[in-house]
Image (cartoon, rainbow, N blue to C red; front, side, top):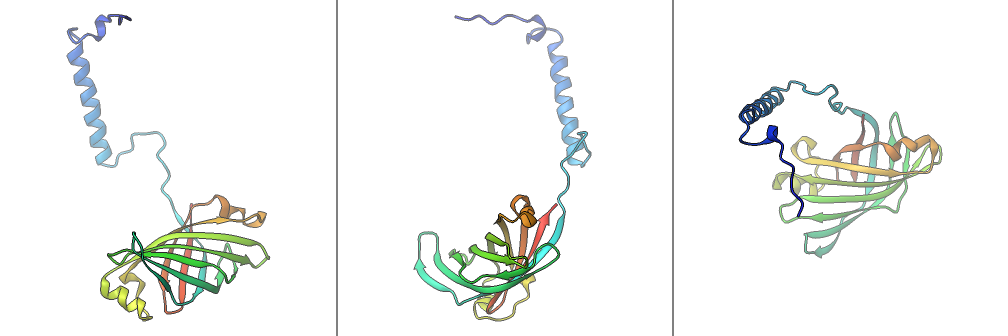
Length: 197
């Protein structure tokens, strides 16, 4: 059996032990107060992310096709038939053939997973996989489902896309975190994409 070496300075019975406990507790409380007040306690804090507008995608979509109720909710597929991309960092068109595979939860939340291909203006191909959520008050979602033009401030529509491309000119898409905000119209989904800087 291995015996632990006795260190008098670390013993609970040593006269300095209560003082060290008090000092450690005071340091911890001091850090907590500074943290609560927003005072920096490190030489370098993580940088605050910034959003930089990259491009807008206007995605043409067909009517949803329902596959019925699954374990997680109603499964729907919305075919993507085309569209346009414009902006300071990417421009081109959306090729037909993609789709948005959706699950509509019992509370009305739409879990979105869109996959499609962008053909950039220079001919490069960009694969897009966009995962997000759309939800809001029941009456607002019903108006959207009926094809009405609804103020996007009345509902939540956000997504986090990822990209794949072999084109060197668009390699930034392969290694940049992006987010997007959307609007649903009768036959379009309009998305503004932002690079997280």
